[in-house]
Image (cartoon, rainbow, N blue to C red; front, side, top):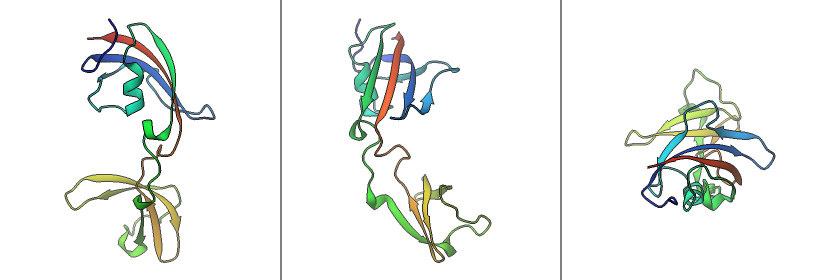
Length: 141
């Protein structure tokens, strides 16, 4: 039977960037399980499995709106260096864990460092990037 919203599926997958770099894979792990249409995975991945059957394989290319979205410039925040932890020197590319007022933890990547300020990007690391997936359906329940 073809997969429909509400089905639980187990898949094997490999996600790559345009240049072929693997950014995520289920290889060497148990198949990934999720409920189709529940929002547990990115929109394009969710939609790609609908209609597939057990044992079927597919390759999909997901543009940013179907994946982690476009880069939102409003999610780049400038923070005074004095407000950062003193024990670690801010460096380009370093990931910081920021907390909202209600205690939620958000990872941010340092994208610019000056003598006075640090610019932190709160966009998902794969925002604005086209993603390629190879997907194989292992089980449908």
